[in-house]
Length: 635
Ligand SMILES: [Zn+2]
Ligand SMILES: [Zn+2]
Image (cartoon, rainbow, N blue to C red):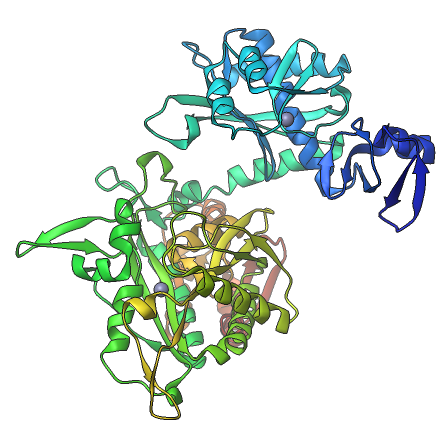
C-alpha cells in the first residue's frame, strides 16, 4: 500500500501501482471525467501513469491553466498525425504549445503548403479525434528511438542530441508515434475545439543556415465558446494591425530603401512628439537629468563595455579616419562617459540620468515586422547611479513610476525576474547572485508579485521585465529594470563616500516604453487607432454644413481652437456633408464639429465624439474648456 497526499492536505492509502485516473475515479466518477493529467510530487504526468510510492498528488482538471497547455500540446500531436495521414513523406521538427495555441514545424518536401490546404488537415484531425485514440507512453533506449524515427532526419537529430542517460519517451496514438516528454490528454476525444490559424516559414532550430520548414499555427480550447471568442479576438487584431492603420492614418511608412528603418509621417510625428513630451515632463518631475549621447562611437569604447565581444553580430560598423566605429546598439557606454566627466559624491545619489537615445541593431530581414521589429529605434533609457543600500528603495520608486505611466494608457502588467544566462555573461557569479537577490528583495518590499525567468537576463546583469497586457489580451515586453554591477567595473566608475574614500557605485539601466517605435505600434493596436484626445494627431475636425453659408464661421472656430493649442483641421472641400463626416470617422478623429445655421446664429458648436452617436450642442467656450481639460488629464 502507498499513501497519497492531496492538495487539500488529506492523505489516503491506495494499492501501489494505482494511476491518478483510478484515484480520481475512487473519489467520484464526475471528478474523473474532468481530469486531464496529474501532478505527482510537483511533476506533471499522464493520468494513467502508475504511482508506485508515497506521493503528493494534484489532479489537473479542465479549468486548471496547465490543462490548457496540455490540451494544446496534445493538439499539436493530433495535427502532426493528420498531416502524416495526408502527406506520408512529411518529416517533423518540433511541435510545442505556445502562449495562445500551438505549432508544428514540418518539412513537406517539394510540396508548398498554402492556407487552402489547412481545411483538409483540420478535417483529418476531426476524424482522428473522433476515434478516441489513447495516447500511450513508452520509455525506450536511444537505439530504439533512432530506429523508430529512422526515416525522419529531424527527429533523428533531436534524439542524437539528447544527453546520455536521459529517459527517452515515445507517445503513440493509433499508428502515429512522436518523440515527446509528455504529458498529454488521455485520449484524442479531448481535442474537439481547435482551429488551424496560419502558416509561416521557420528555419530548423531557428538557424538561417538550415532548411526552412513550414510552421503551422493552431489553437485549441476545451469549449466551443472559448474557441469562438478567441477567433473573434484574432479577427479584431487583424483589423487593428498597426501596419494597416499606420498607413490609413498617415502615421509612418517603411521603404525598401531601408528595411526596418521607419519613416515618421506628419501625423505620426505629432503622436510621437506628444508621447515624448509626456515622457520628458514626468522624468523632469521625478528628478532625472536628461542627456543625449552620440550615435557613433569608437570601437575601443565597445571593447571596454564588452559589446564588441558579446553583441558584435548585431552592431553596424563604419570607419572614420582609419579607425573602426560602431553605431550604438545601446545608450549605456555613452552614458558611462558622461558619468565619468566629473567626480561624484554619495551626496549626489541617487543620480538619475535619462536619454531618449536612437539605437541601431541588426535584425534578420525575415524578422522585421512593422514597428514591432525594426533596425533602429529610440530607447527611453535612463541610468541610475547609487549606493548598494539604495537599491531596494529606488526599485520600489521605479515600479511606482512604471505603474503610473502604464496606467495612463490603460495597460496592466506583470513582472518577471530574469536571471543569469547560462552561457554569455560577463562578471562573477557571486556578483550576479547578489544582484538577483537585491531585485527580488525590492519587489518583496513593496509586495509586488513576480515570476522568475531562469537564464533570461542580459549578458551584463539580471533584470526585471514588465510584461504589458493590451486591450487585445496580448502580452508585450516593454519596460525593464536591469541591475548592472559589471559596467561600473569595466568603466571604473567611482564616487566619494562619507569617509572621503573612492567607492564603486551600483547602477540600474531602465527603460519604460522600451522602444518608442514599438510602443507606438502597440498603442496603435491597443486603441485601434482611436487615440485618446491628448495623443490624437488631429483632435478636432471642423465641417461646415454648407460652404456658401457657414465657411466663415467654420474658419473662425478653427482659428480659435488653434489659438487654444488644440490640433484642428477644417474640411472645406466641395463635398457632400455625409461624405466628409464619414471620412473624419475613418480617420478616427476624437471630435467632429458640424457647423450650420443654428451654430452660426448662437455662436455654438455641435460635436460628435468618435465612436458615439450622440450629437451635443455647447457654447464654443465650453467646448474649448472641455477639450483642454481632457488633454490635461491625459484622456
Ligand atoms: Zn507531446
Ligand atoms: Zn543602459
